[in-house]
Image (tube, rainbow, N blue to C red):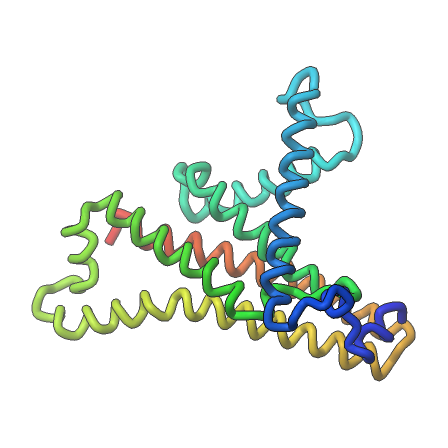
Length: 236
């Protein structure tokens, strides 16, 4: 299989560039950011050059693909966030696309996924944590938002407050660790089977790896949407 020598010899373009392994996730995160910027700029230019930006391109194009992805993400988040979904789409959509591309880097020979490092995942999870708490306070007011930590009845507050605090603290931790564990494990499985069976069989695990890349990005964005919904909902 074409990527097997890379896996067996530990080949990495970062090593060729004399970039320390401790900084590999920083470099790859920068690469992912650059890719998203280039894609965004290309789509923006396609709208700018279009005679009628509302009408899709007559044939398959980058603009049509991005529009399809954004439309599907919006439909997904509308089922959870309702009419507020367009407001949160820029954040949640960016998280999905960023995490997916970052995961996908691990399937390219010579590159490493930045999401197999907690130093990449934790800041994204922290952004989600700070955002949904800020939006919950903005939506309800500080006093009402903090009252949610006390539970349904005041005499359970001594029990509910520690539970709620621990629950909120573990949310960014679980987001980070889940992504880290799945991408690291998938990368190790792909490398192992690539070394053992150099022909044909690794293709199956590349397909499985692509599915894992998508699912982990989906789970990260969907859980983020759930946290936002819990913080801003008036039903509790």
